[in-house]
Amino acid sequence: MLTKTVAVDLNPATRKVVTGTEAYAREVGSRLEAAAPELHWRFFASRARAGLGVDMMVAPFPRLWSQVRLPLALIREHADLLFVPSHVVPFTWPGRALTAVHDLAFERHPTAYSAPERAYLQLTTRWAALRCPLLIADSESTKPDLVALYRLRPERIRVVPLGGGEPARRPIAPASRPGAPRRSGLSGPHGARFRTAQHQGRHRAAATALLTQSTALPPSSPFSPPGLAEMCTGGADTRRSARGDRCGFRGARGESSWIHVAVSGNSVLCSE
Image (cartoon, rainbow, N blue to C red):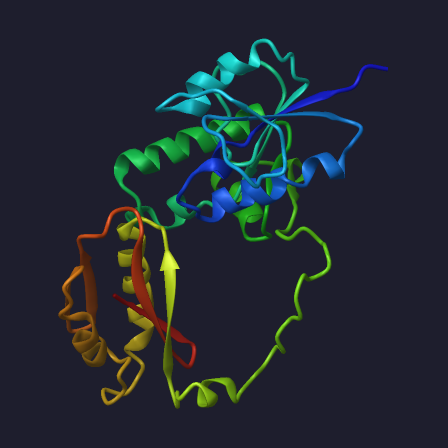
């Protein structure tokens, strides 16, 4: 019996800027050989990257790698299946394909995306839905979105939650530690700082949605609209403006920038 060959587009796992898609490709790709050793796995990317734990076939190409260079690299492979962790199935790939759709945020929150970006995501997702007999969704919320917005039959979608299933490498913190903010010198509503590599438009959409909830807070709260207006003004690295119940972002520091997330009850409010 011949061994089946599965080609994997692992290009997202080699990118310098890591968001959810890149992390998903890296974590899943590193586990595939151990999960199915009876298959012959071939991993492809446009650049090399150490620490992925797989032998990579590197095929350099500057732009549209998945659509142009990957199909050319696959010609000699005669793969039985192409697995694409990032949902972009090549238009010219004639064989079987399987991909993962992580969310349809570009459909639910279109203003957070530029018109070309949203058009490309719509095109590639619809193509994946057309080409793949089965689709992987990594959450129960993505599955009904695919059914409602792309008219897919539920039985064509397999929900595979995130997580490798291995034992934790370090002790897990208790689910609730009410004394932690106090030990850190914080009292009452407090804020946290997160690093994000998302486009600045995502920040703007998140701030707009979350600021809507803040209108229920008393004016004296630092996380009410007047309080956020004060928090969002000033600063040397990124120009911001806030007026009334709106907080806008203008400019960004490249692909990666900082935002503050202020937490008050059930409200989470963003500022730079």
